[in-house]
Length: 206
Length: 227
Image 1 (cartoon, one colour):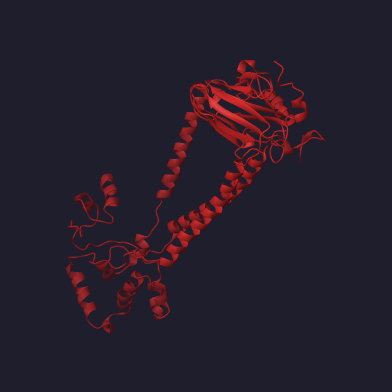
Image 2 (cartoon, rainbow over the protein chains, first blue to last red):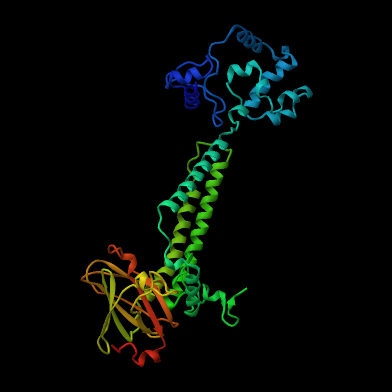
């Protein structure tokens, strides 16, 4: 099951192995790569083929109704059939101003599951669906933090069990004497260490 | 010498090093500008919602982003070459010191006015007094006068070494069978440290160079030449 879902990620754009196919709806079939294929891509808004190739009876009836004059469609059907096309092409919001009042509700960009069957014949996912975010980033960040934390544990173990003691010159008294000597030598007196020491008051400059 | 967490250049002790610091600031500023521009472009590329895969033929932009880098490179090259030629100026050194690299110590020869030859070994950790600089202090320092042009002749007796003193802007390879020359003039007295800068074996990190720059009057009194 998990393998199927993993392979479904692989097969999202190009339908290849039967494993990918099994992960999707049964309307999808294995295809030759040289034939036009359906794809849900933001930069390819109108794919060469429709999503559903073999229409069921009710779907065929719907298509017949669409062929007739659109004035015979109910308000809902009219809105659905035109709106889905414009919405798919990204004109949903602009078209809102021109529509009748009843259209405003349906054309709002919160359709998702409420998209009509006519739409679903032509397209598998709406733009909103294909562009949806996911919670993957939480897994990635969490995993990275986990491994960083594990590395910290490894380093702590190394410090305790592997490394020898620090040299004498890291002792506080040694460092103090060393710093005093460096100040006496006027090490980097222009912008460095000695420039930060006040030689008159014998203290660090404020 | 550098303090513990120093990443920048040490303060200059010679005029050439002062020039190098200024050049470094200039080049670094250009690098920061380019990096910032590239990072910004990358950020825009990663966060754009636009999708156009058919962009081609942007002749004006291509011209701009060819000419502009060429100009930037010229702006870097001119100061760089200026400093390069400055280092080769004839300055008639008053003193010549020979520095010979060995595994793993330096030998210095003052043969202009006498015959002083000595070895300079790093002080081993057990020989250090509290306050000494570990890995930097040596038993015999190279004592030199300030405000006099000095010529260093550098070579090696065995493998490649490199004689470097960052605060003077010096780094010259010590190559067996070859004499390399470098000159410098120190502007202020003090003790200046450097480390061997060419991998030369097990103790490559443990053969430092220490220069003790003293006023000319004191140098002339001859403390260096007493053996």
